[in-house]
Image (cartoon, rainbow, N blue to C red; front, side, top):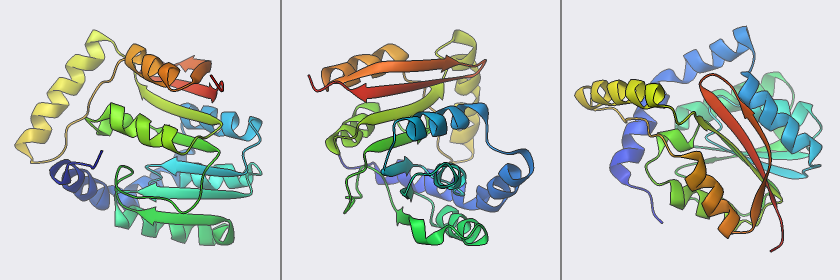
Length: 212
């Protein structure tokens, strides 16, 4: 289940370069609707310890803490993103309620067992959808909530163009994973879909452990 160091390196390099601009963008525009939907799902579930995979500049972490989650873990492949996130949490006086890990989700083993896991626009950055979901399930959380691009032909076409440009720039390319493949894998691991929100470009889905 270990991550591909080549892919990880390209992702890390890209987001290191974008860390400051991402933080400023969210400070200016707020969080996207898809992220708010995931925040609402985790808060409504009564999570005590949530994990945000691909936490970036800390936006979802901050919103979860403001929403009353006692403690939140942020994990990101970009060390610069973690630095920005810690700075922003410090400005909000929330640092004592958050823990950050640096590295690939597939390679990092958490000391804690989160009861809620968020993957906001993360699966589209990774080729290993099965590994990412399997690692999420391994913590046996009550809920898993994620956001992926819509599986439309136009979206696939656009991401294909982005992929060509990324290859020319030696960057990472985005991936489109089907909703059905995600639903099927999580169902086989005992998680049922409890809510879904479809935007023009993104689909936000939340799954709850059924115990089956």
